[in-house]
Image: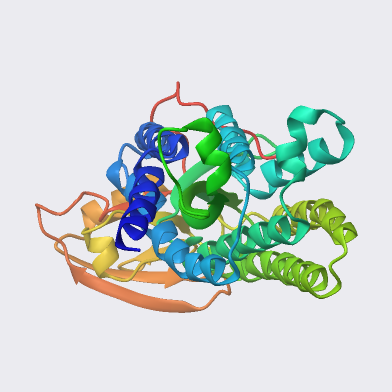
Length: 387
């Protein structure tokens, strides 16, 4: 019994560190961080966070969520064939290599494997069809729940300020969420299949392994504040998760494999609900646009005076010591006139005004650490169009 337990722990540990999606996702997140820092410096001359923060964001939140959901998968005995697990990881790796963060949804390879198993009559795919429908639906449900939790928990944390070009050719600001998480999920694979691959080793009846599944979330907030759009974004994922739970329960209760076709419905529902929020966002008047409200704040740098003064993205600096400002240039001129003490009139997107004040020292950042909506600092920096 003790030897068998050690064998199970050993194979689980191997799957934990030898998964290609683990190291590939960490590499991709490092590249995402490099590109983000390069873009922010090209647009604003400063970066909001270091590259390491993207790697930590990829690993730590998903690890915590994965630990919780692995208890559920272990309780229900989520079992797949080794071939299915390898194909799932392989397709997930392909999605990572494509480089589009929003495509990293485990439901995509799950649906693709399901369609392949249904419509491609090849004996080599018997290992895919051997996975029970209720197990596939349980796997889809757990990954959707994980995405819902991660978007709710981390979706609006550490957003990256960005600039886009409107249809009229004006630069408008936006807050970009481009997050990649890794979900470690415990599943079981039949040991007898593994013995046919490695006859020198003996395996228990069910071998616990960990699948590292990448989950991506990408959204550009331009028309509303992130906290206002996160609610419909999370609600859409919650609805999809609840439908997945219903399909899984029906499959367990009735034992009918036909409920498995519902995974296609889940994917379509997920896409439609996400696109609905994107249309809602783009239908609004751009929030981060200089005008009558003053110089609009797009972001603040950590550990700078602006952060200490409580300035937040979406607010606009209306006056500096009684002098009206409407752009980054006029704001800079005003703070040079009114050293060493600044009194800012700050207007939120509802038109309410509050006051923020502090002493201004020579060692302070000349703009208090505020990122404004303006033309890119470096003209060669690519700015995408808002369609």
